[in-house]
Length: 136
Image (cartoon, rainbow, N blue to C red):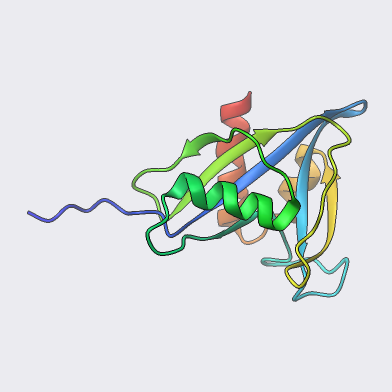
């Protein structure tokens, strides 16, 4: 009998930091939309597709570095039997962000509720909820 396991086709990394005003999450604004525009896929976490032969952990680390210039030891949230793997990384407040030209045109550090309101479609918010449960 064939396996029904799903191999992740890509990965997202929720980056967060504890600011003086409380925990903040890094959201990137998709450059396909004018700066400030909201809606499906306008705001999200660093993410991207797996390259041929690449393990999913390497995909997550590569996409995070390419899209933000951040590297670190990622914590997996969901990486097996899913279409899209989920990771998180806590960074020091004030960590420098270097956006990938052509991919993102803005970023913001936002609180939990603001992140939940911007993450569209629903599947992005659902993934973020899994991260929130993991980090406590």
